[in-house]
Picture (cartoon, rainbow, N blue to C red):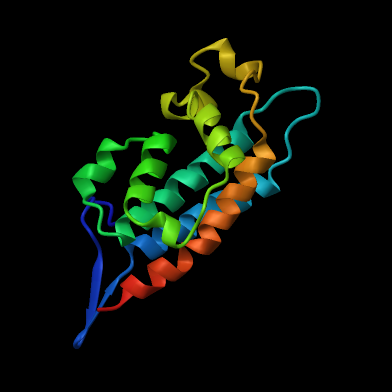
Length: 161
């Protein structure tokens, strides 16, 4: 998507390339790589990996939705809600490429209690600092990795007209 928020389409002669979903998927992979590279401080909770991994999942789901033809106005309505994005992706054929496990869904639901409220970014409450979320970050990390890998085929199919 361009900085103006308009869809980016490249056209060379008779070839049209739709690259927004491809770029979003790459950004999802970049956020996941940053999460893996981050070293949390000793003896103190840091929400940085939580944010980076959740953002990676959000971008991957929205990349899939873009590819599936999910309208921009509907993607905007999802805001940063991971559960709504996952439900929308599943409603638009995600299961054809990716199956989410019960444990992964449970972890998304737990992370979603804080992520859409920007708790991993701005510490609106002490809830984030004390890490009461009771979800396994490695489960979310694995989910992000599998999602990024599995949606690649769906995205590649829709790049060129």
